[in-house]
Amino acid sequence: MKHSTLSRILWLGAVTGIAMAGDPVPAPRPASAKICLTCHATPAGQLRGTFDILAIPSSSFQIKLDESAEVLRYDKAALKVISDEKGATLDATLMNIKKGHEVRVEYTEKDGVKTATLVAVKQAVKLAASDTVSLDEVQKLVALGPEKGKYFLFDSRPAPRFQEGNIPTAMNMPFPAFDKLVDKLPSDKQALVIFYCSGKTCNMSPGALAKAKKLGYTNAKVFIDGMPGWYSKNFGVVAPKSFKETFLDKDMPAIVLDLRSDVEKGALKGAVALAPRNTMELLKTFPPAKLKPPVLLVDQDGGESARKTALEIARAGYPGVNVLEGGFNAWQAAGLPVVQGKLATKVAYVAKPRPGSISNEEFTRLANLAPEQRKGALILDVRNPDETKDGIIKGALVIPEPLLSSRLADLPKDKNLLVVTHCSTGIRAELAYHLLKERGYSARFLNAEITIIDTGEFTID
Image 1: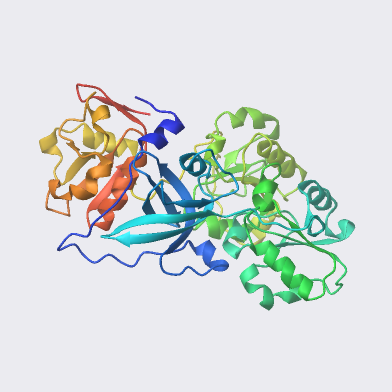
Image 2 (image 1 turned 180 degrees about the vertical axis):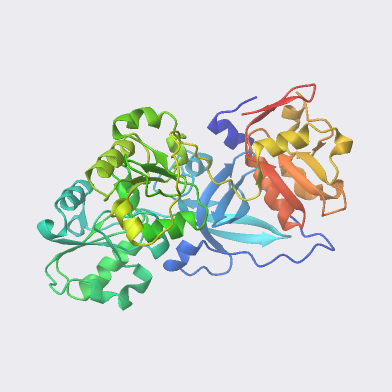
């Protein structure tokens, strides 16, 4: 009962909800992802976030607003979609919206159910060819460096994004603070000035271009593909302090590869030893490129060995590959922490779990208990009847996800009870989790594929 990606979409249900008497008043939910607030206000009746999941059978979809999510129903006869990628039908157009793409949604709300009336997919920024530079041009300039290439490169993204990785030689000039940072611009208003941001739909670098032109800069350009375009074929750079604050201090997972032969003076926490000649062999132990694991290359001085190896990994299909600026010398000079001892020789990357998810191991332990031993916990199967007929976990309560909002009364009254949801792929289980959390339940969900047979036995992929 494993499904293709399309099947997962087609099996997905939608979260809806009607407030119940006695439910706690939920905290105000955001109407916009933080990044959208940089350029836009979000009036009542609208949401701005990134497209996440489509549920065609129940005519609904989910969008993400940073760490929260909103699920909206839609009427095929009434929904309007504004998108560059039109399909033959409304459903086909919705299916063309890529996961993570920015969208603006207008909706009506009745009895706690949001119904989308318009979905505007953020379109690519349109600039005159004379106002843009290509990836090839930027690559050639970066290879020369600012002095020989005679250019100034500015990253218009907010500082936290810049700290995760940026194009080599770039300076951070966040668009929201542009007017306060104009002293970063060159005094020569005929100099080549290039701005970039988060890609073809991002308005920050075009906004910086417009401001620069008003200040009299006659040779200002935008690298429209931005950081995603750069990462598609190249490596970025990260300053030592930025890596510490963005990854180590926040316990964010990353693959750190140390190319030095002498590590007696210590290394970055979690570093894996890599002899450059063994790069392709080590890549076999990497997680799939689709997980987009952050990768950091560390050599002694941020020199040729790190750059060459980073480029090799980037061209193997891994976006988000960076070189530590100044290498270990710069890390040490900044007084940043190191660990002693022998380094690992294999990559062991575990992606940060989605908020609310339960580990496969923890779910397995719980599900293998006899139902009467699951004190304080309930397994909730939110699959459809045609799936559950093949088998369910012993003692699990079955409520198809599309019906959950209308059948909350079937759940135990004790909201301190931990409700662990699962479906066949994890998608509907996550939607059920959001609904339960909004209604005040303690909940978690299994974010994995699970197959259950008629004996109640199961396997998790």
